[in-house]
Length: 308
Ligand SMILES: Nc1ncnc2c1ncn2[C@@H]1O[C@H](COP(=O)(O)OP(=O)(O)O)[C@@H](O)[C@H]1O
Ligand SMILES: [Mg+2]
Image 1 (cartoon, rainbow, N blue to C red):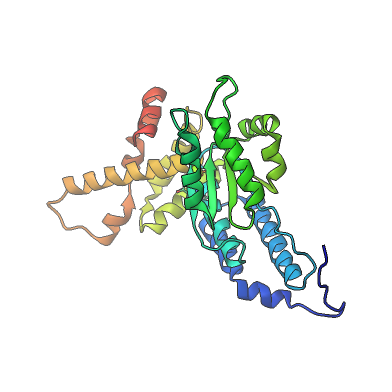
Image 2: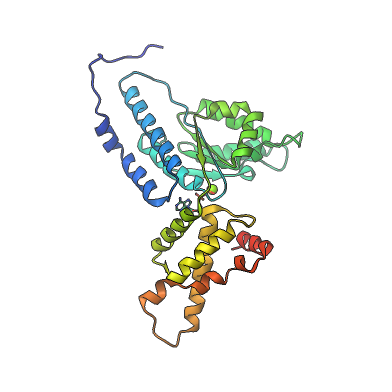
């Protein structure tokens, strides 16, 4: 394939291209919006740098291939995979790798039908919606059910593999889920592994990161902990982490939703007095300590997490 390489002294202004792309804003937003996740943020910056350089190389005719952009995001629930995928879509869009800044998030049920002949139209319908943007497949490994010999997931897999190869300029696929299950999925479906350019691993959060996430989530909604509530929430985190169905930052968000509800009930019960902005903003220790996490009922805790 002939490429039209410019004279060797043709220059490109990488700093200008970076500034014009606006991806710096997205990287800043990622930095502001997500506590911790150092390795993930570093990977995203690396991928962004690669994509920017690749774009300049294509502008100069040094390459004409559409790079493979499909990715896997692995980590436990609530570690920020969906949030980062949205920012990744933004970066891909700003650099011109996808036509529109949209991400369609699906699971097996959105792609696989119940009856013979249903899967292909279902998968194609989703692909049509995602085309030009990002298709985010959560818990992608559920597409593959080897224990079920005639599983319709296989049909979806074949269509996806084909599109991932042939429509690379129109669609970026991000597969997300638990690291170990994804690894087994790739081992049985090497076609997927070979089409994935970037693997990003999302670590679990440390207790102090979960605390910082809680404070950030509250501040964004103009709430804050009282000093006692802060201490109580530290204990909440330590206890909740040991219980079933713990889901990192998602568990924190759910816990704060319930604390806000209890705060509202408390304020309502004292409606005979005037409330200050401070009253309306402050979460008290009682709102944290009322959680079932402290009553030892791990089973009921898990049920509450599923139906917050
Ligand atoms: N590092 C973080 N800092 C602040 N909030 C976070 C962080 N990670 C996740 N969250 C929040 O936790 C919730 C769950 O995150 P999400 O991206 O849906 O995780 P996943 O897709 O891995 O399950 C979202 O509300 C998200 O904004
Ligand atoms: Mg998610």
